[in-house]
Amino acid sequence: MNTPQRKNGPERLGYLSIMKRSLALFFRTHGGLLASWLVLGPIFWHEYTPSTYVLNRADLLPLITPALCTVRNAHLLLYLVVSFVGLGLVWLSPSRRVLLGGMVILGAGWWLTERGFRQYFAVEYYTIWKYQVVEKLDYQPLHAAYLIPLLLQDVQNPAESFRVRTKLVFALRQAGIQSAVPVLEAIIHSPDQDPELRFQCLQALRLLQPQRFATLLATMPTDSAVTLYQQYKRRYN
Image (tube, rainbow, N blue to C red; front, side, top):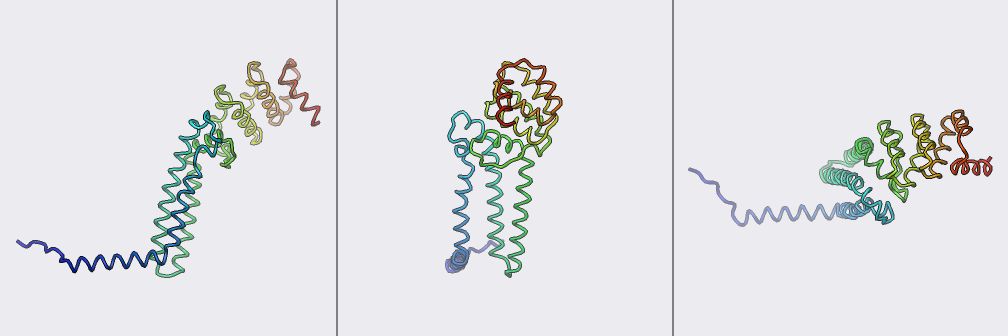
């Protein structure tokens, strides 16, 4: 029975020497590129630190952190994949033309994957956009129709803060979402709601359905929300 022969010491040393020379050549040729990626990684991680989005507000940190961590981890995985593929291209490409073409394809893949993330993690992006205090994430949740019921639900939710609810009312108004009209009217007719929020709803209804707004305003008793609207009208009209 034949038994595999072990490699002798000089042969193993030869393999080690080749590996060392290959690694030394790689780091000498592409060390700057690798170092830049190693620097960008921590910066990328810091970009998704929850406290930077909500200015260390203890009440908002638990609300925004899960969504931010999900989006961050997905992007970090994408970053690692692109980094390894990029290094492979740099190391294995036979010519600069092939390398340039590979980098263009890699960049297009990043862009398309980022767009896919916006769809797949739409609820997480919406949550980040909704609770952020510093406007770090530019997001238009109303471009995704399936988010509108969630947004309308949050507008009516008294557990949400005044800042969040007014932000959502403004977004509904700017996007011209007609399905928001019954929700806005329900808030306007609720005297227990914050007067400023009801005023913002009046403003939104005025833009979405002017005639319906005029009819509603004419039949409403003069209360704090109506007074706020009349003050606004006198100031700006």
